[in-house]
Image (tube, rainbow, N blue to C red):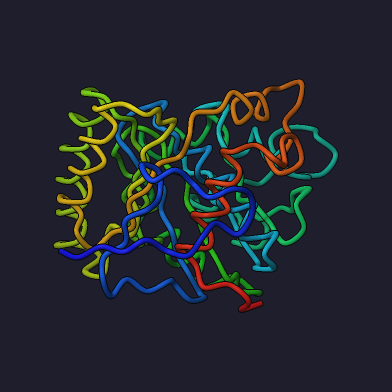
Length: 288
């Protein structure tokens, strides 16, 4: 299939040829309202980094964005974005309470330090959804987005590494899939199981489910990187495929002692340019 590069990045220098995205002929940027699901069946693949950095860039572009932290592990999007949840006493209303029917979508949505960016937080207690799934668990996020009082331009779910009930709920609610992975055998093996889950979810629950983007996380120039990149272009012929450069800055920004959005902590970092590029290539902006 013929592929063409998108326009130059919105900021910074031109990306090297081996990092420029390959976009199938006929690919169209998404228009609001947009629902994105960042998912991969492996820890450390770049899901939370992709979710947070992409969400920040879209919010900075003037869009109203909400992140759903669908990962019951510590250290994900909730940790990084550090939402304003009130006085800090006890666990605030969060995604678990929404699944249980104990809180509304508005009651579990909180502002972050980034204007226009909100988050539905989660904590390790979210694991209870997997242990005792409430009725209709697969439809909860989809229902919640439809029943939010003030709709968002972009909804992004950040999934955990296990493909359980929570991930299925994220896929049903946000069916435009972004797959971050590293150029390694471990990630490629995990990708096979993810593809099976995507196929079953599409066939049984969400016919419009599709892979919209595949991202090679923390890439370095190598023969393996190029081979995996070419393989992703072949395996996902209708998706945007691009690399996100390795950067210590992105990891540092999420540290407990810092917890700043990347655009504040390292505004000129090359990895930030990659996420700006991704935002411009994926989403039609100027819509707010």
